[in-house]
Length: 368
Length: 73
Image (cartoon, rainbow over all chains, first blue to last red; front, side):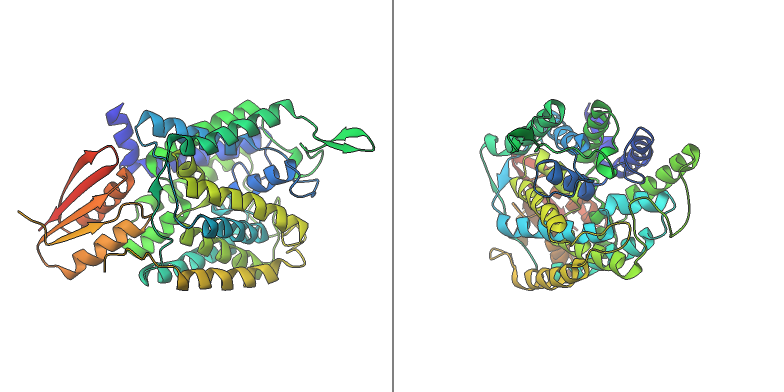
């Protein structure tokens, strides 16, 4: 057990995890998930937000078991390896806000960093603008980190704090299986829980396949510290490429899997759940990359941290859940036809707010 | 042998622990730096960075949630 887990915390860990995600994500598409969306934390949180009734965009409503699996897998791995450490208190309100802004940016691009890489490996060339925007956002975040940006320290909490997100995820799992109707319309039961009958929300792999793959990825990613934002951040900031090799492994494995499944279609136009506006593909991911960097990691990493007891990461995810609802209610999110009416506005406002956060937050106990 | 510098990175999120220690190591040609951390992840990242920069690193677990990292050259 020890030597096995040491492999995952070595430089091989992110590579193995990246390969696995690169193979499993296209397989999830093969088994029913939307195109180039085997795994997308932003899109899946948006779908969950819709299923719970936080927005009423009826084509993107489904409780995605992959998200449940990520948290549960990480939780189990952390318990097994004695890394379950309940903690909270590092500017949770600001993290909630960063979670909101990050998902708003990601939904202008139509994907989180994971999906940006998966879109690229499926031949969606629009993802290049998103990845460049992501790198630009991370680079701006690094400037703030070098200036001493910090959201402050967290503090140990009771065990029950660490159990909160895993239990919340189990409730979501129960809701997707039971599919209760809490609402009333003309006296008759009507969602939530809402499930799309057409569009991306209606496309999904079987529940327990999604859950199983999510648990596997969650467990491995907790051990290997896999992070799609940390990969670029550490490469620029510390000249440390070990996480970045995980991204390369993901892209290569996903490309080869897509190729063998006949799902590699290189073009800008007519890509699944994507638009061709280069400027706002770039801008949306710049906002997302900046918000993720200030919060300490990509949305996948936030889920894995939440699983191992980090209450602040849990708050970030709840911020994403609310932000996704706002994105669709306020016409901020893009669609395959292009950015939403107010998408560009929120990107500009979001970047300004992130810059203000980056300039103003410092750890009062910092040692010099 | 006492440490020249003690850095407490407990409770800080990524990448601040490694960033703070890296900043201090860059100021020193030789010496002993003691780092207090509260997670294995911080230990791994700091050890990787310091080893790469040519420092000797020794990590000891003080108790369940406290690690001492001794970095010397």
